[in-house]
Image: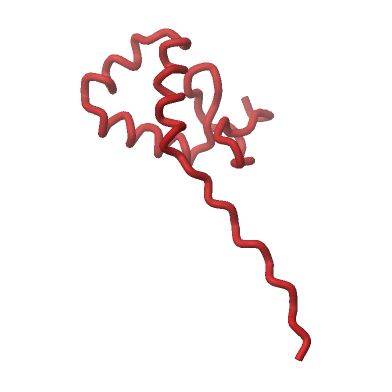
Length: 80
């Protein structure tokens, strides 16, 4: 899994943990766990028994709430 990158568009970090049939970087994986916990203990416990296809649907729902912040572009030096 080390040659894979995060499934979140715009994130180029290395894959850390699976999320359905894809993988997430550590930062996004921790955010995904927090989101699942907020959805309730039932989803968090049920997730372990889900198939990868069922997990993909949950990940797709979570992805809609994720925004990747791009680093600010460097400002050109101004001549004075």
